[in-house]
Length: 440
Image (cartoon, rainbow, N blue to C red; front, side, top):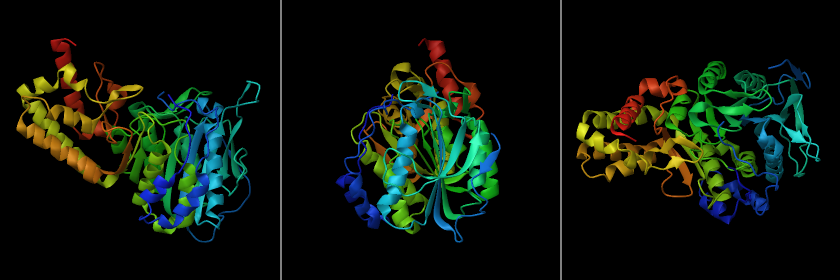
């Protein structure tokens, strides 16, 4: 579950990125040190379209293209909204622009909806979501950004709402580089973005179709990030590979305060022209690592989607060898062996892939060919696929993979591209069948 945490970009972060393309903006982060998350942010981000009324008739707010357009879809119509996480993050974006201290060539646009209370414990149900153009502001308690559109009775767990948001924003704010951040609860292969009023959640198949429509219209995003728990699974990243150059997410739960939005916004506003998709991913992971340093089960990684095909091929080679070597497979499939592999908190069917390779490779009797293929896959993950990774311990390496204990969830797993284009599902089903045959 989410914890009470302190947000601070400390000197460690400043030093760690001082030689990077965004070094010129690091000094602007000093004012952020010591900022505390409100005490009400105590929850976690675990698993689990209406007509638009424009605020004005402007076709675009800028004549030239911005360096970056960052769209943050904040679906806070759940306990995260009640605990203040949504408003906290928008205020951080405002503060980040103010910290930059100059006119920014970056547009931060937020789709904002949340549950709230009247201070006496009565829940206030939102009658609309607002599209905000984030403005520089130092008031940490009040959102003062410009409302550029209002959507009535929006179901924030419906992919149509996300699609409507992106379609209204991208033509209005043309940019050289784009990022889309989906903010909410996450559940790995189950989906993302729950709406407690409508009882809805975006499943990956529908989200994938929506992203396909959007990229067909506007081109591939530079960055697609999920500020939600448990989303950095191989099958999820593979589902997103055609829609963004870099995918950012966490294999473990994300703490209540989410991404380091103040520092991210500040650096983009100060040095956006020098930041590409790779540097954007590195930036979030660097800041996240400083923000949550030492917090248990805390991870974040950035993946180069161009390397996912190579990852799939190496995974297929590894699993193919395991499936064809019965003696080795019998050792690997034993419950007590794979039970050693790090599993994700709150999602038992999701396990760290690199740690799985390490566990298998230390088993006596497993063939040398399988061990070499595992090492090859591990090296590719760590040196090519993952651009940058943060983890609080050595058994989390930035990428999880589907491996349930006994129950194979054909729906939703087999609706995903990864199931169709890799042999991982064949391996998982063989492991589960072996367990049934030999007793759990």
